[in-house]
Structure formats: C-alpha cells, structure tokens
Image 1 (tube, rainbow over the protein chains, first blue to last red):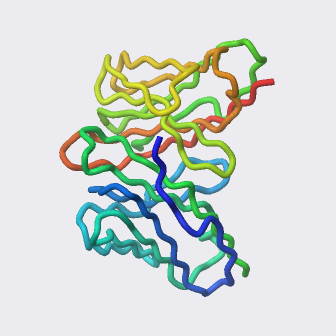
Image 2 (image 1 turned 120 degrees about the vertical axis):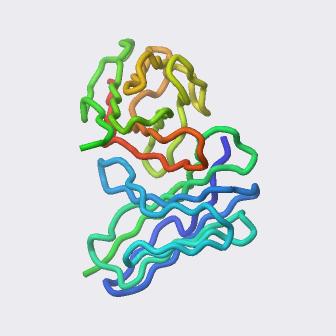
Length: 113
Length: 114
C-alpha cells in the first residue's frame, strides 16, 4: 500500500533547538494528522488538520496543511528532553470514502540535554 | 475514563498456534482498525471495520482474521498462516463520517512467536 514520504528519517538535536519535519505525497489529501509515539506505547494524536493552508498549534508544536494539499509540516520549538520519540504523519486521501489513513515511516527525534 | 484497551501487553506463542489479540473501546466510536508495526517502519493496516458486523481487508490482511460482533470490540486473530507474525500490534478507533477522521490508539500488544 501507499506510504507517505516523511523526512528526515531521524534527527539528533540539542535541547532548546527548533525542529522541523515534513510529509509529502503524490496524491491530494483532505486530512493530515500528526502523532507522537514513545517506545513500547501506542501513538498519541498531537494535531489534526482539515483545510489547505491551515496552521494549528498545540503548545510548542505547530503544524501546517500545505496549500497544494500534498504535504504537511510539523515544527517543534525550543525542544526539551521529553520531546524524544517517533513522530508520524498520517493522511486521508481526498478520493477516499472511508476513514482509512496512510502513515509516513516516522521521524525519530533524539534530544541531547 | 474513555479510551482503548489492548490485552495482553506482551504475548508469546509457539509457531503453528493461532493467537487472538483483544481490543476494546468505550469511546462510542463506530470505526475500528488493526495495524502492524515493525522496527523502523510505519504502521501498516491489517483490517478495519466501519460498523458492527462488517469489516474490510487492509494492505496486509493475509494470515489474519477479525470479527466485529459488538461496537466496543474488534479482536484480531493471528493465524498459523501468517509467515512472520512477530511484531507490535496496534488497535485504533475513530468516529465514522461527519468529516472527522482522527484515530485514537490503544497501548499495543507485542507478539513474539518462536
């Protein structure tokens, strides 16, 4: 099945730095979701986006629904050690008539104190 | 508290045995999903159900079976036909339709088959 192209695959940053990651697709999506997963746990929903151009924040996290509807971005400002985890994007295709989501392969974030 | 529960957290089985993973939700969601996660990979959809007594195959349904007899429950059976069953299995649920497609995940079951 199709997967989204998520990049970077991994990041190792210093505490306090800002982080950016993105997700792209060749298809148009009408929903973008961003999740965080910690080791051995299920993913937790961070932000949901439903409109092209939409910019939504959740604390230090900001996500955007790309204007072309083929991409989405997640930024984390002033990273802290507890930001460590795997961040997944997920999208629902515009042509879909179900709630099925397609997931990216994840961005592994490590933060050095 | 509303949420999704999966049990057990860890499961060990011998090759050739079928095993059933439990998933229960009290969020009153119509739709439920099963995903498989392997190291370094994203989530791959096994089966999903949008309504009671109905379910569809996802991208990697071979060697798995499901049932949806109750709205709250969506058990997954990993059969002996699944060639590489060792993985982390995640269950999720969501509202159906109404333009909202946020899926909420359970804590996962790690299955090891030897």
